[in-house]
Amino acid sequence: MEQILPHLDSVFSIDCVLFGFDGKELKILLIERNEEPFKDWWALPGNIVGPDESLDQSASRILYELTGLRGIYMEQYYAFGDPGRHPQGRVITLAYYALIRLGGDKELRPISTYAKRANWLPITDLPKLAFDHQKIYDKGLEKIKRRIKHQPIAFELLPEKFTLTQLQHVYELVLGKKLDKRNFRKKIISFGVLKELDEKQKGVSYRAATLYRFDKRKYAKLFGKEISF
Amino acid sequence: MEQILPHLDSVFSIDCVLFGFDGKELKILLIERNEEPFKDWWALPGNIVGPDESLDQSASRILYELTGLRGIYMEQYYAFGDPGRHPQGRVITLAYYALIRLGGDKELRPISTYAKRANWLPITDLPKLAFDHQKIYDKGLEKIKRRIKHQPIAFELLPEKFTLTQLQHVYELVLGKKLDKRNFRKKIISFGVLKELDEKQKGVSYRAATLYRFDKRKYAKLFGKEISF
DNA sequence: ATTACTTAGTGTAAAAAATACACACTATAT
DNA sequence: ATATAGTGTGTATTTTTTACACTAAGTAAT
Image (tube, rainbow over the protein chains, first blue to last red):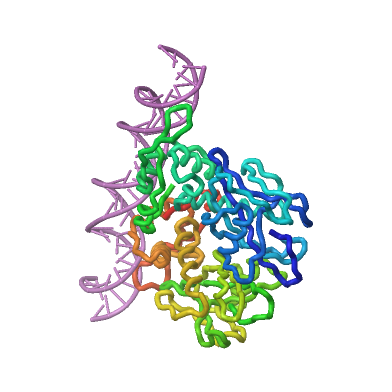
């Protein structure tokens, strides 16, 4: 976010790559700018860090203002601060990513004046982005690719109850490659962090799959033992 | 680094955890502060980011001012910005780590006024640190622990020519645990990024070990294929 | 020159993990 | 009843990881 430029020596902002999964595609939330520079371009949502906010709080606020969502998994991953990255002066920005399950309809609230609109766009077909936001996005994707191999973050993109096929789908989208079904199931179940439910998937026109839930307690017990994909 | 506090809304600084290896111990460079707050406390070296510097440049400059060294491997790893982290106002700091082979004598130059002196202290016996620098250090150590498993950063801590025992020693110090000699050698050699030299270690009062060198070309060819410890 | 000392350097067997691979089952829709 | 679409399962092979102990080589002291 780069709209406000008070005359300070440097400005410190946060930009967010919000990854969303709707059951089919991996998307990110972009806003269409209504102000110069880069008017009418798509950009990552962001904002200036407030004087009494922590960095994490600031990121959560930005997310909340755009989507109305709270309690979302977010993580800081890199600071971008090249002197030339903003045409109007020095802006250092700290990038966060967030992982969001789409499909509820509470997402996307009225948004602030510097943006015309906000949209979830599939990562397979992104427009040109303002500023150095392409670089910021690239690094964000790289980060979650790495992290999903070692930390149980895939579940953040899924509803509380999900099927193994859905889970595999998330891994495939993030990693950008197909996985073997049997081996995937064997491995993910061997981690021992999934609870199989007595419930089946509903509303499908074929054999319904068993639902699972991520078991935070079991995961906590592993105590640092890392998952490894 | 937290000494200068012009009256801006927020100050953006860089703090560095400089890891050094002298062949025996893993150490970090700390400075003893000569100014309030935290006068006489040990702190991580740092400084304010200049208006026309990139972040990486700024980190390199700080390193250079303290040690006279250039061309050192440094990497940004986390931003700390809690509103309360600095008693005199808002200071957001970006942490870098660096990996340095000690033992040359060019290290440690005359240092700036806010510090009485600078010293390499073993990480096994660190004093209390100023500000939230313990937290910054902890996170830095965690980062290099993780990174040394996947990237060839251990070589940055060693002279150009080194023995396998020395290399193993670095891994053991960073990871904080003993490794099996035969398995270590098997694995590290199987990566195919070491070049065995015709030269032997000198000046030891026992059988001299073969020297190796990290082969950047071979590593470049692996092209993303990751090492895995 | 013998001996004591210290670190270098090496192989194998067993266990565990990763991979490749194909078909029968079940629910729904027509 | 039949077609359809996705669910769910096992095994054999290869690769990787682990555990483990002795001989070789050089230096220093006598």
